[in-house]
Length: 78
Length: 551
Image 1 (cartoon, rainbow over the protein chains, first blue to last red):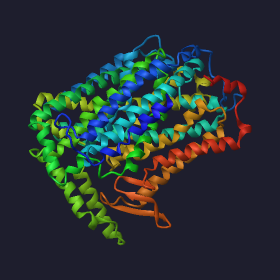
Image 2 (cartoon, each protein chain N blue to C red; image 1 turned 45 degrees about the vertical axis):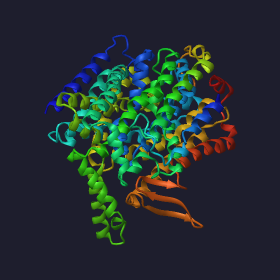
Image 3 (tube, rainbow over the protein chains, first blue to last red; image 1 turned 135 degrees about the vertical axis):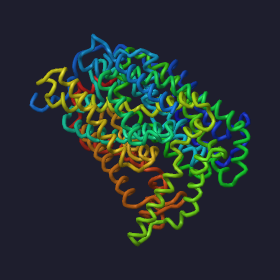
């Protein structure tokens, strides 16, 4: 899954559309802008897969309250 | 005056929602006021979290940047954020939520202190976080001033507009706490998500369709590059993918992750977040670009003429050795930049093409976006009362009621300071946001990653990251005040080694090897965390502490 996310991250750098305005998608959207709009929708689909395949259910159990935190204490309080 | 009246009515409505939405008789303690009792539901969690991340920057800054720079704006900030933020919420936000609920944390610094068994290093992190958050709050005041001034046709001056917005935000944060703020954010997010569709439809009709507008932009050599990214280097574009890391490190986002009632509330948020980004940013960016074809609007034409004058006079306005000439040139440059600024261009389009009643409603929607400083103000208040007041004995001595009251007093103080800064700051909304707050928080993001995922991290690694971030942000700020920005397109080499420019000053800020400072700042932060932690293994927390974070 990490590789898939890295691949999608790399797709953000669409150098192949750098100097192109045409075709105008739907007659008015420059292709570079249309690509990134489609890319955004694709991310949402990726998130659906991520949630279904890797949802950290165990964190729900790990969230049961065990009281105040036990780390560093304020000055003068030990 | 009708748009201004509608906007003022909207402000009163928002104040009411914040005041009444914040009422919860059973939650008089600090967790109730600052975290809404960790009981926020799924819809409010999604809409409020998204609204918290959207500021004046998203509508006014984005459309203003697109007006001057073209479609590149969407790729720079929207599509990169649409990936990084949901992925961050999935891996980091869910863990923050679980740890916060399990151990009672109310702020990230509280967790850092526990994770690395430190005290004053946590205070250092708090100070850097607080200083970096103030510019973010200033953006909202600036946006409020700009919007109210614009929708009232100048009848409400910038200073008064900023004051009114500050007062309203301060009011509902003061009385409503997290619950009131979340309800206001939810209402505002619904409003400005609707804004895009309505604005695009109305403006398209007014301009005679977007196809002809785009064709006219492509036909002119001066505007055709706005529909491509040829004026921006791929390295510069790549740099911007580091900026959304700031969102994960922003305390108001970290704190908001603690408010969800259940873990499952994160599911809808990570899936729908990219679509919300699309709904708000695509219309903002597209309309900003399309404004260049609004030939019938004198207010926009004057901006285009100022931009052309800036480009034509650019070489003559380069820094001068004579102090007097330098000042005159700087003043001329600032004057042209202010006249060419596109921060209010979307409002000008709405005024020009929408009927008055619709322009008024759309003005209120824009106001919804620019008022997103509430969460930041509340977060700073939470941090101050938890990480300083309570940590240094205030809560133990005076009780939880005093902690809440201290938080409220801090809200007032912070609002006044942000307003004062907004009045004297000459920079555009976009510059202030991206150069200081975003870059600084991106550089702080290795703290969260190390705390949650690396057992070998130590408090000295955390301190190194914090000090480096503070020094780097200060260094960039000093450099940019000493070396004035050149005209657009020009580059001033600041430091070169062997014929290769290392640091350069450009119109949009500073570059390091052609990258924005945020890239080296973040990478060096990560490296410092690794190296310094590895050099201080004796300072690793006890096994019990480390085990608590092995989720």
